[in-house]
Image 1: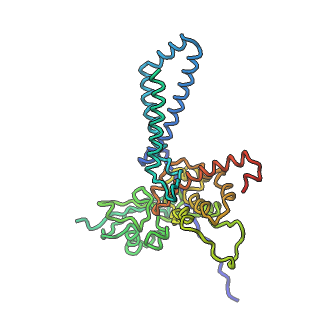
Image 2: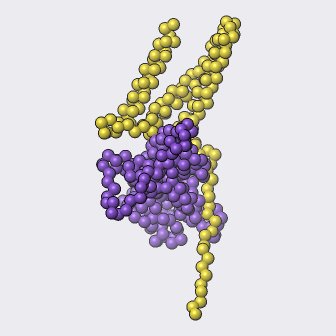
Image 3: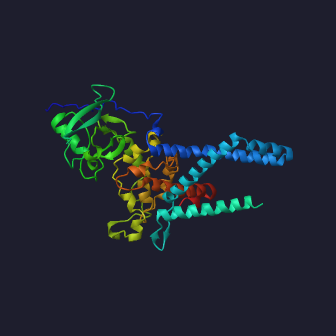
Length: 138
Length: 249
């Protein structure tokens, strides 16, 4: 009778590298992504400011005057400039991402990504201009 | 005129050393040599102990994916001349356990791939006698892009979510799920919704977009996942609001 050879599977422990905490700092595209995510903080902060503005409006003239004076401080203006930049960046990245989720076919042909982005940007500008028009021509 | 180039290889030899280390090799700078040719030269002429995977040498098999100077790349389609004057750093693909040198463990990916049921699930069983299961060119075009995936896993290495969340199905698996979801012969969307809407599914993607930039076959997994998010959100609300029978197709 032939002797039986027993084989043992050779599989030493694999090495599993860990991601560094600074991973988002290592590629420009990762950094741009983290900045885009960070815009949410500024958008949320601005929403809180809007709520505080409404509260001041409902609390009477003195509260409103005090609140608008606070808003005109250099610190507040500085925050608004930074928040605006982040909000614009947020909007631009959002519109740039639109074609990844939308597949539109017109007369059997797919609408090019550039057209989709342009359509979004045009609607954005029209809406912004309309809101600015309402606010500025009181 | 430069005659050689330095290849810096991240090595892992578990029976000798529990941690990886880097080893430099000097290889001839041949025009038209890909990084894979340099690795083959090292194995044949300098150090037979170097382990790496490769097969077709023409960007089809998806075996030779590695990190080249920190970027995921198919080493057969990446040329030495692109990295002059060197050195070129070759590491195993990120976000995978390393078995040895440049060889990664793909078992977890294979499990995830199977989980999304990447095969045709017809509405009714068909036999050979039923003949061809025909499609129009437009029906083919709806999913053809996603069929081009070669499972090279570059997208997994490019995606930080894969690195941070081991339960995430990942770009290629979701793109391949979509390949069947958009196939007119398939009726398995409901079964795939169960997986893709679940923990680790499409909604774990945070839209970084690196997978599509890394993909050598222009599959665009980013697009596949975002399109699923739109479909999946519809399905989620249907399941929540509609009676059970109506939600399940």
